[in-house]
Image (tube, rainbow, N blue to C red):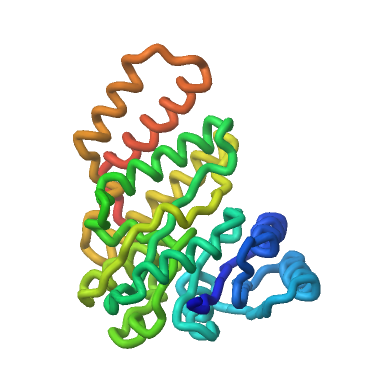
Length: 289
């Protein structure tokens, strides 16, 4: 077996965190260790983690990162991990019962490949019957399908909701989360760093989690706005056009299909959300001053 550190970054989401931790406690193959980095929460996050620690057999470590932003917290998790491989899972995700076991199978399968720096898992919609959650999931999958065709063509899609990193490879080539990306897209940036270093990232959809997408129109609009703001910031710093702002012929075809088939009211709402997100993505980027 290959030891793996599991890391969760959290901030003021105690309910989601408790559910995520519970899914790790129920694994068919228990994790070697779980690291929770609290990004300066002011709720009961600390109490939840310490209570969880008392009730599981594997090591649980709780760390506070006072600097607000995902890059600071993720870098701390990588620094505090005890094993070469670290698996990140978002605090609003629920791990499949065989998540840790499948990670082991994938690592063993690819153990002879020396230049792998990242293994990207897959995420499913935790609320499949909710139209807003389904629209966000569909949009997320469109984003990835534009560049994942068996292998990963553009490492921008290496999002951190369910991913493994090989710490020695990152350290050797000086790859780290850039602290400038406090508004998001830090995962896309480190993906491009991995690519530029000549390292390899592979896609392992059998490693999957269930992600809790937004369930109301207000949450949906807020999340899409944050996506575009972080993409804007990513574009500004790197002078790079993210694929999120590019609509492929396949995407256009899927939108045309949605507009021409007969839909029930739920499907219509999903279609409108998807069209909204794509039109928003086509809109000219407004650079922040």
